[in-house]
Image: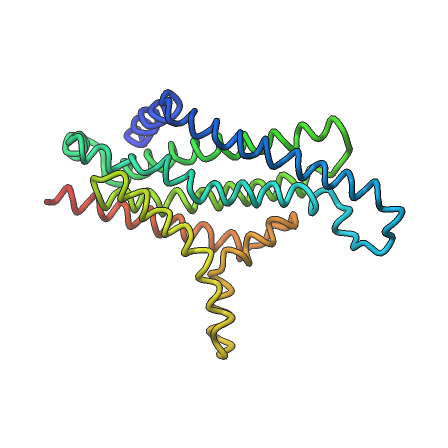
Length: 257
């Protein structure tokens, strides 16, 4: 446990003291600062014109669905590309600089190395999610809304980011080239969204159920509606555990070599 904390503190400083982390955060803020006011303005116009369009669906008049979910869709799209940028150097950079060999000979286990780096990556992802949460929080000064669905939805986005971080850390452990790690990580992040499309390509009911269970769209949809489902938790934590385990196996095999 002490080894995990030591590595966590080292990697956390590496994230939050790195100029690249703040450049990424600035770019995320620029995109959200452009998209959020546009969506907010569209929602305000919809409310203003409601008296002339009485047949509008009620969901379009709900700030959670009409504004916040669109905001989170932008955030999720950015996380697909941002999380690999944050994690690509976790192992690849150390391998390139040959400091990974020193880490392998230090008195820490492979599990402690992986967990320490992963928890630091979670803290970095959490910083990006909190940055996005500031926009709905600012909206609170202009209108009243229910906090519970919003916080549940953002917790779901954070868990999705945690799944990205686990997959991307595994990709970083496979190479010493940070750009290769980035490209592979983006491919993994995108694939987990498209794998659920298999449900539309099969006539087997059993296969359809399997594809729907491993579909990120299905699980994130429940979070977006402000509902916590056990199946979504099991799926996301299973993805995280699987790729952390695979990364640990890669580190352990490097130690034996």
